[in-house]
Image (tube, helix red, strand yellow):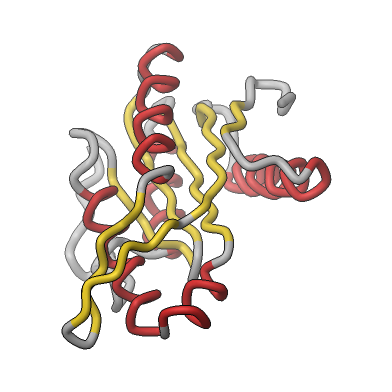
Length: 173
């Protein structure tokens, strides 16, 4: 078993979640260990609109609230903020039904407003997002993972879909 030292873990300064670099280090360890994993990709939509409407402090507060929610969501899952408007969750192998139930809970939470306090004022912010989840197989590489993410994001852009997408082994939506 490979143990990750604190020096290897890098975190996002705003949310305190692990970052893109650490996400891929963790993926590499899953692959090297021959472990199947459940990956959840969350892409926020309209974060710029939130920042313009309420101010950057509210946008940052929204990201902090989301990070806290995802960090405490499910035992065995690690939350990452991998860029400004993207979160990832990496969890253990589970039956597809459990994976579907978890992504359904996340989607339901994201359909509700997020209470955000900034400059002494309370704001109710609605944040739209789309969700992609799939299983990372032990035989796959980091490039396979990136291909799944990029392909899924392009499917959403082309179809203008806002929702959930699940990929099977053949990268079919």
